[in-house]
Length: 238
Image (cartoon, rainbow, N blue to C red; front, side):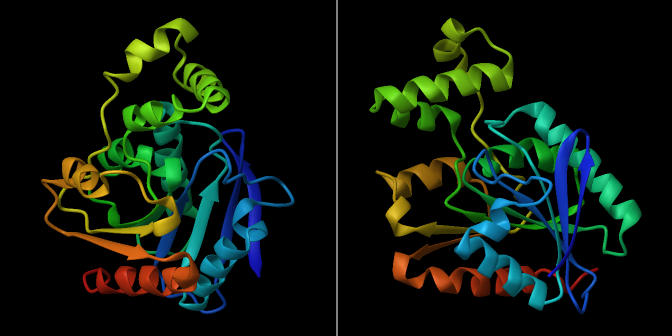
């Protein structure tokens, strides 16, 4: 697998190159677990994510991802990604309209990033996305250990005093993606959330071009195929 790893804005960044480039590219968004280091990264170490990357490379996509850490939707992180996009477009021979593949907390960046890259995002594929910081906060309260870790990470990410996080988080906006950007939402059933239909309707009620697909754990292998099919459908107009 051909890839280039370098530091951009003090964070390790990797570009994966296909053998036969199609001219289209995908920006990978994740959270703390989606690490990218100098000699290794989550996208290669995790078997399922490696399958995804290899499948998309085989379809001609150039993929780029950067180490984002526990950002929890931080505006500065979205800003760094917008700068990385500009650098990537200048340096690589790819179409300027990019696809985005966001997993987990990576989806918390989509609202701000969509604004910063207005007109430059071709489509968005989401896998088990976190779209509401408040909802995550309410979920984490059920486990004291994880709740404490969560509160500390949010405090550091958003530069807020620890004792102010609980009040601040209620005003943090849920992620809303502009309705003109096509979205595929894939939810693996072992990540099922309570009242899921009401949850996604609240967050996406104004979105006209949205597909939601449910996948059982034993059908995870189909996810790269569904992502590729979705991305391809939105490449008719250069």
